[in-house]
Length: 445
Image (cartoon, rainbow, N blue to C red):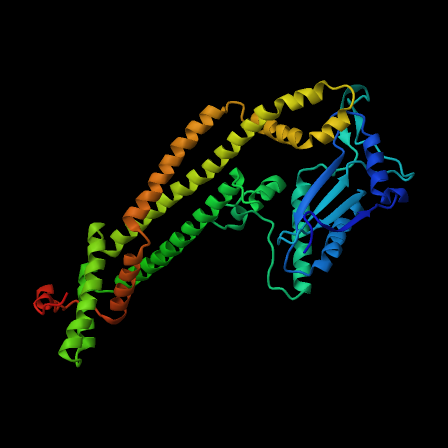
């Protein structure tokens, strides 16, 4: 069994102009840190990527190496990567990338340069800073994600695996599911120890919600498709008046009665009683919802879909509110650490290393707070409580009124069977109807 946090492979990849001594990890990062003189300079770019469990473990290093050479090293970055596998089914790689380019003499270049703005006469009218390289452009994230998708799928295909990954969000793929959130190492470790975390609970709620919604949407999709079939069939009837669902249920009983002919009296009554109970239950359900025609059933499905849409919107907003509450909490919790770091004149690097988690949490929270300057913990919690009650009420409404939609599925079966076999003619004046009293007089429960 592998040990916790086991590194199964580590490697440094260098661009063409980089000194070979940078193949030593300590030398590389000491040099990168030495050239950074600003207290808030970013030393490296860190990327963590999950590795596919569908390919052999001994191909992980080759996969990551190929990806890093194509996307980072070829652009001039030094790359330090390590492959981790704790044996818990969650292999991943940590990739550290340098932020500065290297010139032809193996020296670090500045991150940006000063560019003077000139008028039409060549006179200086202003200045601005311009990045030496384009590694910080936001669109790179999309490029790197897509490149990883292609690289992993290449290895899956090479190993004759049917799986493929798609780095697009559910929304961009057109998948109507709520995505789970990334736990991170701290929350993952706590969850593995059996401790309940905020993010872990949120993910469990999302998985449960997606499961319920998937079941409901499948049932609704089947019903919607069925309604369209019914409308098409009914449009071909020559009757001026559309037959009601109750009429069709009676026709179903009549057809079932004919199917039972020839049986002994005991089995005839027994089977017919079962049919009557099923139809009566379905009819009672439809009557409770005032469903008399295909159109009225369609309206009910539209109502359920509207409620489901409100639940979806509420769930998305609840997720954002919980994240906001957490960010504001982190902002307050770690502000003193950030203030202390900002005041330090000596030992800043050591302090930054020792308090990296607190500082990272604070700056993430600060970015969110700056973008949502009017938000307060009190207002977010009040909106969250109100929205949660509304969502719970909508979920309860669906569960109490429509359940698992089993009776609607039964109605679908019965009505489809009748419409497939019964022809409604203009000259038909009346239908042969089985009256329930005839069956109840046989003393059948």
